Image (cartoon, rainbow, N blue to C red; front, top):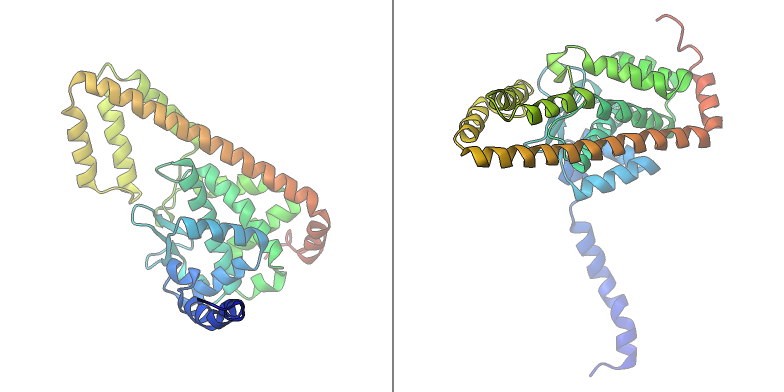
Length: 301
């Protein structure tokens, strides 16, 4: 039987063992990457309010961040394997690496929450706004960009956000991701173009166009690296082998599910725009100071 004195001391006696146990637990960053420099970038995120919230999401929905070994000064997704690749050019800059990682992680968050099977322009647009806000949070200075020759595009995007506003910043991001750049898995599509394709599948059920539309969509994913050719061919063969009544049911279920996904992503997109507008209203003084710091934004390089 424990005496009252021992019972009172028990938590204190267990404390050293508890601390030793906690010290042996793997850090969150270690679960997300094997690269020390990316761990430091995650620490930069964790020091900001919005970055900390994003890291909490990554703890619940882990993904691996590694460096890309292919050309392209951009983030790249291999979400079927759970990997996001970052440009090696920012390895020696904790701040710029953190901004690049944050943008990719924000897109990944929208991808998970919406249930989309590929990245679309709207996700990149609101991620660009998040990235700019994070740049403000870590107190980026104009000299930081001057010291990194690879950060020209980041500087342009940051300048646009603080000088011209969110609408111009999203337009700049959209223009970039809709341009042809295979090294960066572009061009992307928009929600509008994807919705138009989905409507075609609903109208095409009574003829061969349905199979063609589905197969061409899978080939589109093959080009982006999100699916193998063999998988696309197998999906096409399996679909064509279904009895007619099963095809009708598959089509209705597919359409309903994808419609729900688009509705969810649209809500997330609008919510992100509102969040950004609220942030700008709350941090007008910070934006004014940033405009003074980056007063040379509109000057030629």
